[in-house]
Image (cartoon, rainbow over the protein chains, first blue to last red):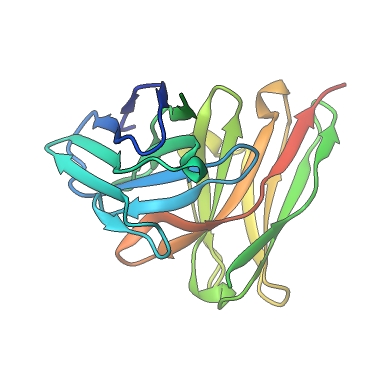
Length: 107
Length: 122
């Protein structure tokens, strides 16, 4: 199985701050990478697919990028409603696998 | 809008089976894959498998072969997952999720149910 190593595991940031979460794939997955947000007590929601494409209804302060097998999710100006956990997921091959998650809290 | 309504929490005994449902609305049920995902506290997310309700085709994570069985009822737009020979390791929240695009992004999930908690305990 493809391993997805996500960092940091937890992050504390201030409102309006820029936040970056990274994910390293254990092998080449091209752009087959998705990011999900999970708010406390809720189900995950798709944020980004194809490494850089924003899902419908997702605010433009979210963006995704790729450099080789390293992927990043950036929140340009952190808002209160962005608090929660974030997961990367490789969508390249069976079984699709998720990163361990990043818990984002307000400082 | 797309909605996936899952069945409620289950408390089941070790060695038994449980069947979780996921009723879909707001889209053509038979045209999209339905995925199932397991979430345990501290263990992140694990993909179990998918079913294509249009023809009943399934694909599983090898880890869940023999543990999970996916079915779908087109008449009620409801997907099901049965988990068998339950142990404490199966205690988790289970999500159903719609596949975004079966052709180009088969493993991307764009709408999720609210989750169904399964607790295995004697």
